[in-house]
Every structure is written in C-alpha cells, then in structure tokens.
Image 1 (cartoon, rainbow, N blue to C red):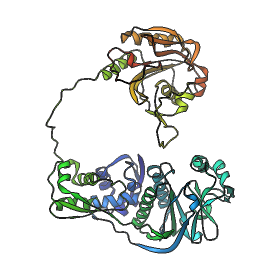
Image 2: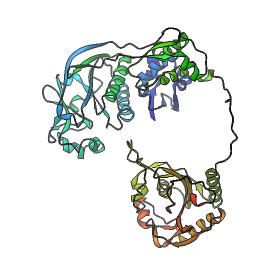
Image 3: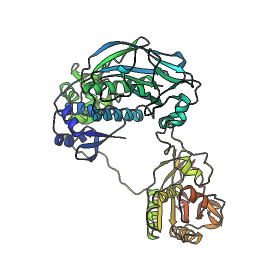
Image 4: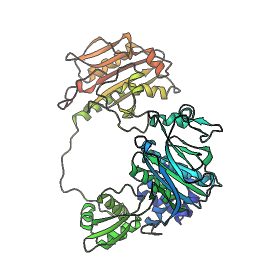
Length: 551
C-alpha cells in the first residue's frame, strides 16, 4: 500500500477546512493514519484508490465527504492543437501512449515534490514498476511541437536527467541509476522507445528517464504529459489521475491529438444500478433519492432513475469502479460505518481448535521453554535468500510471484530456516547470544503446511547445541525419531544430521556452513534445526500434499 505525505497548509487550502477536521474524518474514507507530524500527516491508502495518492485527490474526496462540494467534478478540456505520432515499430515494444498539455501550473518546491510523489506512486500502483505504465512530465516551453514517439536505434544519445553530459541509450542502461533499475524492461529489444520534438530534441527515454532538457522547475508554467505503456486502459488511468489532480490545483487541461485521437477527454462513465440490490447488500433501507445523495458525497454524479434505480456518472479518475458493488461500497462509506447496526448472524457454529493450530501452539511452547524468541518472517522472499545463500538447489514446487513489485519478494517461502538466518543478519549489531525460532506456513506445489525452525548464534554455538534442541523438541512432541548423517549443504559436513521418522527425512540439525554464514554476513557460528510439522502425530495432511523433505 502507498503512504502519501500530505502537507497541512496545502491540504487545508485545497479542502477548505482545518487540519483537526481533516485528521478526524480522513480515516472514514478508507485511509489509515500512519503518523502525524508538526507540518504534515502521512496517510496509507489501498492500491485500488490511486486517485487518492496526491493532496489534490485527497482534498477533492474530503470536500465531498464533508459536504463542502458534492457531486461530480467537472473538468473543462479544450484542444491544444498539438499532435503526437506513434511509430508503428513500437507495436511489440511499448505501443500505448497517453498525453495531455497542462497549462498555468503554479509550482513551488512543495508542489513539484507532490507531483513527483504522485508520479512514483502511480508507477507502483498502476504501472507495475513502470512495466505497464511509465509517466513523463516535461516543461512544454523548452521544446517544439509536434512530437514523435519513435523506435530509436540503441546508439542515439542525449543528456539524461541529473546528468551534465550526453550518453547513448545503451550507456544509460548501464551507467545511470534509473537505467540500471529499469533496464530489464527494454534491453531485450533491438530498438528503444524515445520521445522527440519537431527539432529532433530528446524529451524522454521511456520507461527509463527523462531528458535534462525538459526538467520541471519552479519557473515551469506549462507541462507536456506523456504516459507510455503496454496497456491502454492503464495508460489512460494514469493520464486522467495526473490531469485531474493538477486541475484541482488550478491548472488548465488541453488535449493532444495522438495519431488523430484527442486525449484526454476526462469524461465520466455512466452506470445504472439497482437500489434494491444495494439496500439488500448493506442491510439498510434506501430510496433512490437517499442513494443519489450519498453518492454525491463520494463525488459521483447521481440521480434517481425511476422507483428502483439510480443513474450514476463515475468520475474518469475512479479506475477502481469495475462492478456495481464497487459503487455500493462507496454508498456504505458515505452512509457511515458507525451508523450500521451490529447484528449477530442468524446461524451459529460451535468452534474448536484446528489440529494444525494445536500442534503449532505446542511447538511454540516447547521452543519458548528452551529459551528461544519467536520471530514472524515474511511469507514472500527470494531465491537468493531461500536457496543461493543456503547453498541449496531451488525446489521444483516453489510458488513464484507473477508480477513482483520488488526483487526482494519474488517467491513464497518453502523454508523458515533461511529467513531466520536473514533475521540474524539484520540483528548482527545486537548482543549475543541470540536464539530465535519460527513456526509458520510454507508452500510447496501449491500445498500449504507448517514447519518449525530455530537458530542460535554465539561464539560457542555448535553441533551439540543443535542436537540437544532438536532432541528436546522431538521428545516433547512425542516424535519417535532416529538420526542419520545428513547431506544438507547448508550445514557443515560431519556436523549435521537428518531427523528420520517412518523412514522419511522430516528434519535436519547441525552447525551452519561457513559459506552460508558469509552469505548472510555473519561472524559467529550458528547452531540450527528445522522440522516438518506434518511428522507430528495428529497433523491432518490433505490428499496430494507432498511428502516431508527434511528442510
């Protein structure tokens, strides 16, 4: 989720109310207050509301919710006469382009920072790390229309933002910080996307970096906006959100003709929704007039359409409205969560502790009794931590994130021991000894089950300590185990053992290998053990669950 910084002075001016009211009421529109500072407030919003990722968007929503300005915001758009052409050679590279001219902006350093923050938040929430959408903001007066979006040779050069010398596009990918971050988005193509003006000056190398030529400063009065990407709907969502945010701050929006198509229109979308369905879903009594009034507070255009329906105009920036129920959710917000009656369900069930929860609880009790402190590692991790650092081969059943937003979170964990090693690395500045354990879910071949792992780091940590902890744990949970020599590469040869139950490897213990210690930048020996809790008597194993693998 995105955390947005909202300066009080700017927000008060845009909202038309005082900071006390804003702080009290802003959680009611679906926000969490992260921290309150002397001159600003940090707010966390869900990814489905990118229109709230700027002070202008928040102020627009708050004015409606507080009854200061209700109904559909109207944004007048006029043609700029500027054209933009798209090279057909980009069809398989980055084919989509959204653009607009934004005039009469009034920028101070705070406003520029706010715009850049909105840009980066949209890169994350809408653009999927710039892969789906990348946004460029340019000083229009520094360049000459018409503009072209072209597939450029890789040896073309220009001065990128924050640099004072020309670099080729290939050099930017290797030498510029942004180039290194986003090179993977374009480096596989024979040509690169480039935006140039009528004089063949380079404005931008999307999705990597803008040119220094069009840097936005406090002297900038007119902006050219470009949004490039692989999905036209996402591109236009980002275009609409930025245009309407700047319009809220007093700017004028003008269209650009992209291959003859004038954009943006900033026109609302129309839906007709059922009042009866909304009332039934929310459990309240509503008339069409009531529903229209509540929707007006949420900045929709709404009017009764007969006795049972409401005609709704959805603002162009509300990309989260995909279904009638999304509108009903806003009705509930406007109605006020505090105004819903708490009613017990008509049916009841008799609860009991699930067997896996009972086993996990018993495992925690044993480890706490041994003097270990419980950790709760992240469920998402990466191959480097999970496999490379541990000198283990990746498991074929590893579940991978399809569109990761971070290189640190690309797979679902199959092991807890590696994550405890990462925690030792993060706490290496703390006093020794440190004895940590974790009990939690791992996923393999789409099957979820529980493991336990424990680590102990101090100058005297050794095989005996690991064996003693594993032995006590197994005896306390009534596990009839035997021990054999292990081949797990995460441990030192000759100082490692496998835990065997019913002729299956269900766990491992020993001294962590020096190469693993070096990979996690640890300077002291580590004694550790890990065990698959499916080996505990009474653990329910669904059909098709893979067998314990010993790690």
